[in-house]
Image (cartoon, rainbow, N blue to C red; front, side):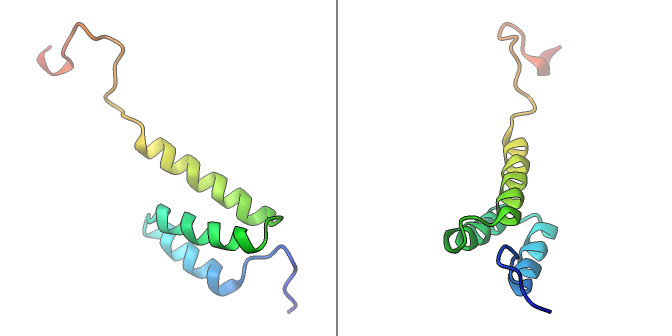
Length: 76
């Protein structure tokens, strides 16, 4: 089987999948950034990077934030 130009190396891809399954998204993003540095036109890497960055963004949002600054939600 011949590797296409825009494909991720199967070894790298399996390592990235393992990191994602362990929810080590930062490490997976770092690996993808290294791949992207050597192949800037890789659409598969770009799409996976965007997906992981969205996951990390949503994880980091404060679910307890409130615009009601006059009332403490814990003392209702």
